[in-house]
Length: 174
Image (cartoon, rainbow, N blue to C red; front, side, top):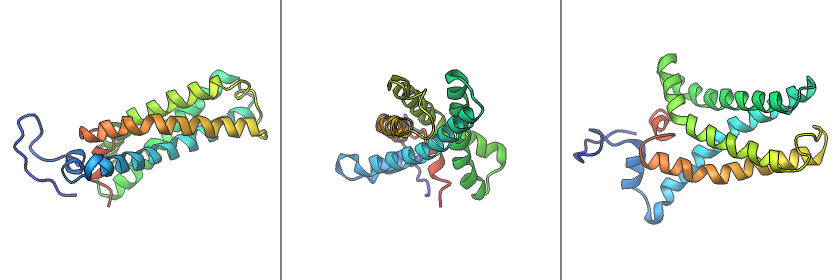
């Protein structure tokens, strides 16, 4: 996406991806919402991979709830950032710059998703004690990720509208 000079006193010298979407948006902000949904699905993918892998490993190792949740959160961030860094590196950016782009693009989104996801799963009676082979474990994990997705979409929409969050990485997706 190319940038266009812009003379608004409160903005940068060029359009950000979020501003570009606003100017070419359909009534009601549907294009901006679609971009936020796409960014949130990206975040959900990384979070889900990290959560599942973390909980599977922690269960296998016999860890208690606290360390299990900590591992799942760390892995959610690792996979979330990795899913952003990989295509950004392919666009030609140096690793250090790509890491900065991923941190700027995904931190608030992943943090929001993780707070909501873990709060919901902790609120489901017996979910953390359920084994990996039980419907309660998988149903509560799916439910918690779905709730986190619904809460995170408007967060990402607001960030993108301000040229933040996923708007930072949008210019590197080809």
